[in-house]
Image 1: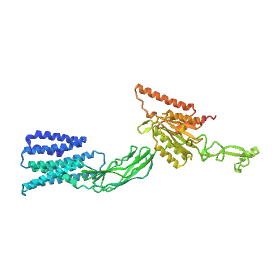
Image 2: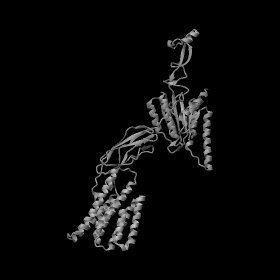
Image 3: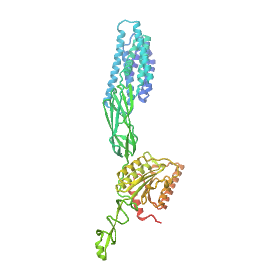
Image 4: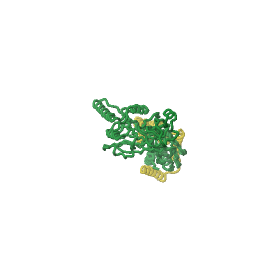
Length: 159
Length: 421
């Protein structure tokens, strides 16, 4: 919830004029997250994160900032929020896990979030480095996007 | 192993795709940076997964146990490489529980052996296993589930009640046993003296009586013989409240009686007279005890409206001069008719009424009270039928010692004898 609140607050700071709209969207998302954690409605987790992400994106576009350096942090916070909520849902099942297993999971979540932060930061650094531009980078970006869509579709089908 | 992917893996890939596409279209690198952690998580989840091939063996430290005993179940696991955590669930019937909160349990993947102590709460024949094993990767993106081990049989025998005295049949059989026969022959217990006849052994001469009477007199003894007991179980219907009920009490009483009679070297047989008819011919020894208890564990109520009388039983199940100990809840008139017919054929018969009253909660409304009274009256009528036929019938309620019931019948039989035509 702290990570969620942090991203919401940052979105409000990015576009102060649209704080009520951001707060409304984020509030609905936070309510969904509370439902996920308290009532175990895991289907709502995606919607909750999507709403928060939408808040940030809207604030980003409306705020008219040239570059938001906190974007990797926002991505990391969203991922952390999702991982912790999922972990919380898994802990609802009556399977007695030892302390060592919990520590291992915490370590794995931490590593994943830090690696995600690193990846986001790398993207920002690469974007700010002048290595040329134009068609090649556009094609690379489009390829990555298509690949991501393909992976998502493949995973969805295999489920 | 059946593999299941976490839905969030798809969600992460979807979010990454949306972020990358939007970033590309809008020309904002922040969206790509926002999508990067999700893209990384989806890529790691999809690529760094190694499927475990979990197999294992499930064993129990014994196949037979008594109520209240603990049975050690061991599960040996192999092939957990690739998993970070292994959840194990051993499905158990209600009559078996595990001590502590060890079922289900989550184990680190390097643990190869799991031991669970099963507590046998109630008697019955059970099948334990296979265990359900669920392996997960470190972040729970993928789970693999399979059944491990082979089903193990476990028989939990009812605890046997301590009984100080038993009912003795009116007549004994021809084999050696612990029961003093009413007839005269070679034995220990003194019976009478009689005049010497050619063929009598010298050591049987009662010298004191001979000196007093001036003629040779010999001692006569009661021989020690075995007896035949037939446990006649009425299984037409059952009244139960949760796990307790008349069938449960019937099985407990039958197990206790069989145990004690077989200890005395008597032959014991069982007849289950109900919707499903089954029997065990009378025999003695430990093997017979196991046979009887095993058959009791399989016993159940099979609803049937077919008319049944005593003629459906094979003649050898009811040997002559056997004591028939009937355990009935007095719920079905067919068993009453069969038992009265047995008595008419001259069998030494005792009826223990397994009282269903503790398991019946009459409702408060008028109709329920009326039906409860009618039901009580029909049971009284059945009891009266037994009494008119000269059959001792004693009620036994839950919590009461079986010894008290046996003693009541013994008292009755001291003053009453079956009439001989």
